[in-house]
Amino acid sequence: MRRKKIIKTARNSRVPCISRIRTLKMFYDGRVIGTVSEESNDAGEFDWVIKINWENWEKNPVQVAGIDMDLRLDEYIRAYLPMFVGERTLPDNRDCLMKELARVGMTTNDRFEYMCKTRGSCGCNNITVEFLEEKYLDPTTGNEIVPDKNWTDTDTSKYKPLDFVNGRWVI
Image 1 (cartoon, rainbow, N blue to C red):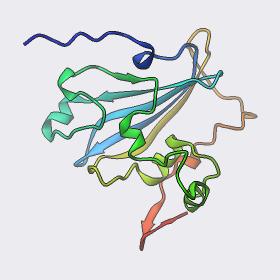
Image 2: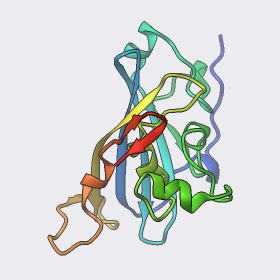
Image 3: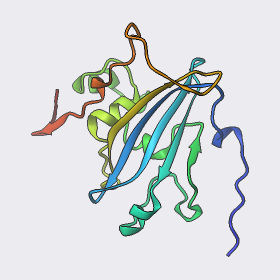
Image 4: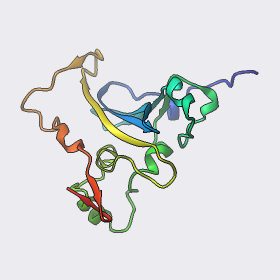
């Protein structure tokens, strides 16, 4: 069987000068089947990287939305919102968006944070997510840097998952 040729385009390439990487573990049937990371730079550009742990995935295969599982790539890069993330988060044009975000203790539609709080639950499949790590990088060298204590956006406690009790998210 011939392998499909992957042609790099702006839609499947990393953004330049990445300065922040936030990563979630993907769980299915009690196993970590991969990770999904949001990479961003200081210009507000972002991409998403989905990596599948093929050894764990093969024990109980499940379709990850928007990913061609037949390609078996080391990583799938999306310079747009991947379907896997879109089906687990709220669209920006949703009616009563602010009310829905307030129910989970949020004031902006940060899709990564929303997935952390709701464990990425959706009706399409039983894949859930859990916060793994957040890294800051020097955009010129790519080396990891330790956040200064005065930085305002380094509190990872906001990624703590909420409990869903009696049809409501409990903060």
